[in-house]
Each structure stands twice: as structure tokens, then as C-alpha cells.
Length: 213
Image (cartoon, rainbow, N blue to C red; front, side):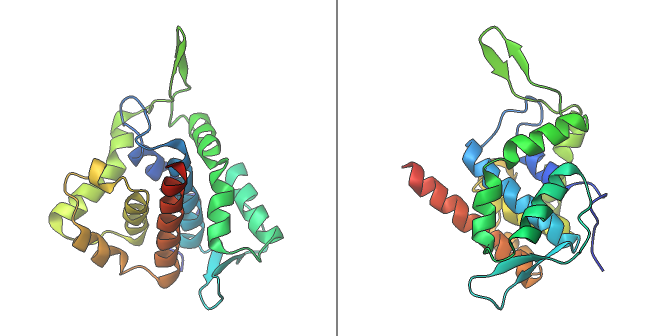
């Protein structure tokens, strides 16, 4: 049984909020790294909803769709459509592929859903999309901080959120208390495919950082 479905509060939206200032909407990471993290979030969301699965026995590990019907919002349908059409690609390739456009796509989806305000141009500078509700934007990070303070592992969805935040290299910057041992123990409770997704996202982010130097 899937822990969540695609109508539940979005893991991707929560990750977007954590990677941006919850008042101004300014990004905390370079757009390329944010795109990779969001790509991991989209795939993680689909894995939690049991719409895609990871063949961990293959080398390299490959994603494949588990549902014949492609449903969901346009962004979800587009991601699933690519995976259905080309199931031979390894997960690392999908992360790089989806990261090219997902930042803009997720932002547009959240604006349409009224989770973000449209960007505003002031004189020669454009302000980024800001959260429509600061409390809603702050809640995902507050949940993670509360779990760390209580030393109590959260549900799988938030374990993935925490793992992707660490993979993006943003954990020390946003968490009130970054406890690597707690994070490792928490993500270790996840099924192997989700742990592999987090690892592959971290690898992709690390390669992106190196390539910019």
C-alpha cells in the first residue's frame, strides 16, 4: 500500500518551500542544484505513490513505471510519460534530464495552485515568486526540526524530504540542529529504492558543484 497518493500534499512543493526563504521566496541554492533536488523530489513522490519503481538488481539501477495509465497533473503526466517511453535509462540520467526544466515547471505549478505569488518586477529587478502563505511555507521545515529535536523519525515522506535536503547540501543552512547521525539513522529506515534515490541525488549534486569550479 502506498504511503501517499498524488492528491496528497506534495513532497515536491514542501521541498521547494524548504529550499527557499519562506517570506521573500529567494532561493537558498544555485538554480542548478535546486533543479536536481526537485528532480529527486518528483521521483521520490512517484515512488512513494507507487507509480514508479526502481530496479535495484540492475546495474545501473533503472526506473520503470508501475501503472499503465498516466494520470495526475500535467507535470506528473509529463514525467511519467518520459519514463514509460524510455524505461532503459538509469536513475542518474533521469535526475539530470528532469533537472533541466523542473525548477521552472514546479514554480509555475505552485503559482497556478496559488501556493506562490507571481514574480513582481521592481524597476530593473524582478523579485522571485514569494509564498502566498508564510505559515504554509514554513511548516515543512518546522516538521523536520521538530522531529530532530524529539529524536523521533518522521513518516517516510518526511524522511525522504530530509534526505533530499541533505543531498542538496542545504541541511546545515536551514535546520536548527543538523545531526548527521540522526539523519543517517532516519534515512536508513526507508526502503532501499528511496535510499538509493537520495544517494543518486547527492552524487548528481556533488558532480554539479565540481563542474562549476
